[in-house]
Image (cartoon, rainbow, N blue to C red; front, side, top):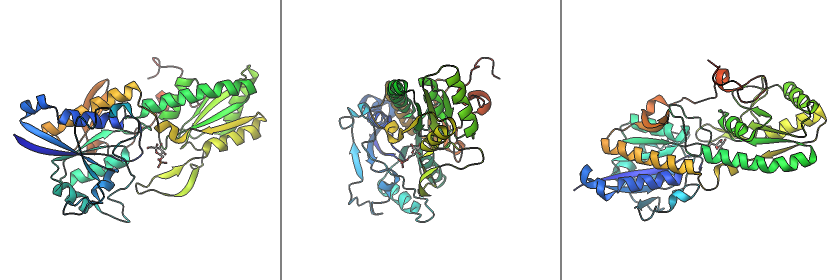
Length: 370
Ligand code: F6P
């Protein structure tokens, strides 16, 4: 029987849902019943630490650092129950202008004899996949990011588990906030897209939600808080995405500089908003940064299912030799889209239909909004 080799990697920030996707890539590719139908026997090589795994082996294919691991259905049997990624990840970009190693990556894909590479990642990882596909490499993308900011898909792995963390933590904060009549500002992740803060805030019933797409005024935030107290609220939960900014302001960073994808290290807006509320309203205010807790823990049922479906669909594309695509979900249907359609684009909250910029909260009209 004809043989073929697939490489699979996870790149960028980890999240829940990666291991389920890896499991189902392996199980589907190496399914013995499907082998007969396909007339091909697939082998799957796991590439450790994202694109870095393809940089640290030398062009003769010698893998001194053990970055390439053969996978099989037995190895991955229990992987869907776990968060993170058993293959490891990195934020290394082979196209980093300061150290372009894209040629080496292409040579190594050839020397490993990979017919295709399945890259599971967010905007950075999939931008690299797109550029490699332009250079003739057979790649398939699987969307993941708790930020849910990739276009052309209604879902990205990790998002729903992260929302569950937000809801759980806010539920915990409510009892202590209520006991002390305090305001809690909770900072979520979400660099350019506010989905985590918005949908997390909607799910946990936050009083105010600040997102990167809508620059906010501290005066308005304080006005809303004061209004709430006058109406009898005992405490408030305010969610703010790490990328949110004041009108005319810039994002708050926890350290200067950018990573090899050009991303800033954001963090600190929650503390800032809390201090400004306390100054402006004289109400006791605390802040909590949820940070990487949102990326941790076991995948929720939805991430396990979506990881499974995306993993299976990615292998379907390899079997069809339908490369340069990202698997996705649109209107409830698992499908695919050309990688070039997502390159350099982001899926942001639509302020006209998905946010109430006056109350700084979720929309209050759904069927009557155009
Ligand atoms: O993967 C996206 C993300 O979770 C962003 O929301 C956040 O800004 C960033 O990753 C944090 O990355 P790191 O793990 O490098 O701190």
